[in-house]
Amino acid sequence: MTDEPSSPADDLTPQTRLVTLGREPVAPGAQVGAPLVLTSTYHADGPVSYARGGNPTWTAFEEAVGSLEGGDALVVSSGMAAVAAVFSLLPHGGTVVVPDAAYNGVMATVAALEADGAATVRRVDVTDTAAVVAALDGAELLWLESPTNPLLEVADLPALTAAARSRGVLTAVDNTFSTPLLQRPLESGADVVVHSATKYLSGHSDLLLGVLVTPASEEGTARRARLARHRQLHGGIAGPVETWLALRGLRTLHLRLERACANAAVVAERAAGHPAVTRVRYPGTGAIVSLEVAGGAAAAERVCASTRVWVHATSLGGVESMLERRRRHPDEPATVPEDLVRLSLGVEDVEDLWRDLSAALDRA
Ligand SMILES: *Cc1c(COP(=O)(O)O)cnc(C)c1O
Image (tube, rainbow, N blue to C red; front, side, top):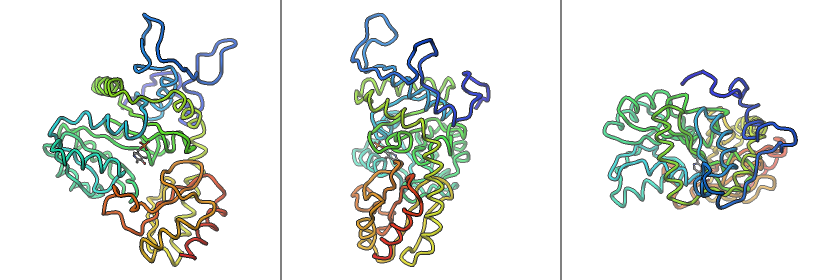
């Protein structure tokens, strides 16, 4: 990666850039906020002719997220649309290396490709770097998530991306859990970064959106063009209103994440001392904590059903703390324990959160 500033904003910290990027140029009387452009088409002879190909609200959001990740971003309709776009790069019958437990939509995607005979899938323990490297020979795509959802396993991104590159294997990293404030996979050599912007980037549990980010290199730019073509032809494009709301949410990412991460560290530590908790998974960073609860799936469900402040719902990365037992979803990999409750820390007062959660654990 180059340290050369490519735009005047690059001398500013990410915390400042996420507040300022994507605005209209400064001019007397111009609006301060980013534009919300609602149109299906444009007057002829401009750079974009039809709104499936581009929208100024997309561009504003892409400018901000691209700058934070250190590449060029493409906004799509959901995190799964971003996942599908990456898998469109896998040739028919190709081989993909994936974590043995990762986001269940990705697990279901590779299982469907496998069942259709469209891909060979190699499932690996991403914490075992040597085993992942050994699985790369003859593969086309390495799919990584770090930390993984919901086991919070951490992969050695620089080592794995280097091993993949030397074998001509494309590396895609789902950076949803970390956000570019905690981890920038392109700097570690990844070829594509994927986000469910539904989660931390937008941060208010009010929309679905996805982003793909590729490096500014020649190879990355060519790949971005393929992904943009997929977006245009696949047709499930991002709504401008969702995109505008996501950019509005992004403006406070640093504040939300700082509080959520601080809350996670406190709850992880206290949960480890609760007699109903048999294991705490917390990688020491981020705002997701997974607990294993004594008494199995039923006890885990009782915990989720008996909180007052914590919201019992699927999803994560919003201002409100959420929890759920992941194995209630049929697509969840069997390697995820039945009694595992995933906590997504929000920005509430941590004392209220702990009082509520510890009372729910007491009752379980
Ligand atoms: C939620 C999630 C996705 C899917 O994103 P959607 O916006 O729900 O389509 C992908 N990866 C991870 C890690 C997620 O948490």
